[in-house]
Amino acid sequence: MGELDERHPVITPRRVKFDWDDTPLHWIPGEPVATHFINVLHLLLPAGERWFVHVYKQALPLIRDDERLLKEVKGFMGQEAVHAYSHQGVLDRQMRANGLDPRPLTLRIEWLFTHLLGDRPPIPLSRREWMKVRVGIIAGIEHYTAVLGQWVLDARELDEAGADPTMMDLLRWHGAEEVEHRSVAFDVYQRITGRYWTRFISFFLGVLAMPLAVYLGAVFLCRADPTLSGVRPRIRDYRRAVRRGLFPSNRFMVAAARSYLRRDYHPSGECSTQKALDYLATSPAALAAGYEPR
Image (cartoon, rainbow, N blue to C red):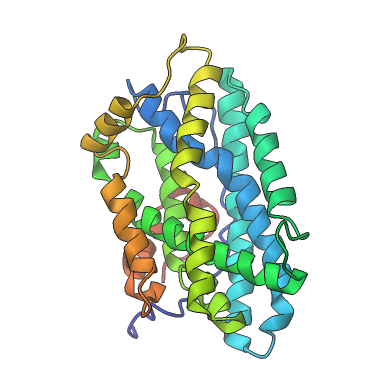
């Protein structure tokens, strides 16, 4: 077997399916607030992943002369489309079946991506330059989805806490694919523009809102949760989840930002494709979808 190519792995969608019939609302036992901190991903990802695909369809003409990158982007788009409908399934079949309706917030998130980050620039830029900014935003977000994907692959504390195996398979399958395709968004950005300061600004546009989004999303979920009476996430709840290893720390997130903002940064120097493939070789959903380990 040849040496694994961390920079240019083979990227193909895996058409996974998940059965949520036996997954409880609080899928980390005894940890409703920690559960909802992570559940914010399900609120953000369906609209966000669809937005990625929409923006990349506009970017494709700018990379058509790079056959390898074009092939990787098409594989990336396929994976992101599967991620979107898989997390949508949590909203539609796991949360709503347990009496939690996420739609009041997800409709606002859809508006954010389709209007505020839509095709019409909200600032004085041409559509072409705005598209480059959005590609930069995606590159920054994809850096975080990759390092968080690696984090969840390594987070044995979630297993020790008794986290639901189907939910863990969703999170780890998704995390593994984020690690697998982690270089694509950055390579597209470098190919289209490559300007460091645009990357710097785009990163902060896309990522600085993340802590606020996690907190507000968790507040919404706790309020909408029919089993919780007026519970509101507090800083102590976040710190407790971090101490138990159930949620990544602020230190982890800051270290990831510093890594991305290095001038010599490339995603292939982060995370481990081999670890991702090792998990995919055992993932119940990936194997059921016909994935053949390589």
